[in-house]
Image (cartoon, rainbow, N blue to C red; front, side):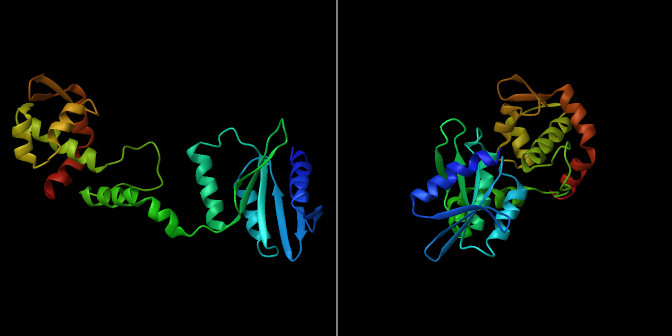
Length: 229
C-alpha cells in the first residue's frame, strides 16, 4: 500500500537533513531543507495519473519525486520508457524494497535535454529515415492493429514474388535480381521470411502455396509497386 512507502522514504530524507510531514496541501510527503522544497507523490505503480500529479507539483515545489514499490520489471523496455519520460520532465523516481524497506533513487529529478537522448540514438534515427525513404507506396494507416504493414522489406519481397510468377513460377536469383533491381534479392529468397519461396536447387527458387495466396492478398499493393517502378 502507498502508506507503506511513506515511512521508509521519510526516514531516508530525514537522514539527509530534511524536515518532513505527510499530507501537506494534498502532497503525500512534503519536505524542506533550507530554502529547498520537495514533494514526493506515492503510488503502487508508475502510471500516468501519478506522473500527472507529480508534474503539477512542479508548479509549487522546487523538486518532485515519485515513490513506488521496487518494480519487478525494472529492466523491461516498458519501464525504461516510463523513466525516460520522467527524465524529460525532470521528475525523480524513488523505489522502496517491499521486504527490506531499502530506499533507492532510480532517477534523479533533473531535466535531461532531448539532444542527449537524440545523440544516443543516431543509428535509430538513420534507420527510421532509411525505412521511410525505401518504402515505395506509403499507404499504411496509422493507429490500427492486427493488419499487415507494408514495410520496405515486404514491398521488395512482393516484387520478387511477382517477378517469379512472371517467370512461370520459378527462376534463378540472378534473373530475379536483374528484373527487379533489388540488391537484397538473394537474401530475401534465402531467408524466406514469409514462406513465399522454395529453394528447388542451388540458386533457383519457385513460388509456394503461401506465395500464391500472397499474390491474391496483396494484388493492389503489387499493382501500385509496379506502377511506380
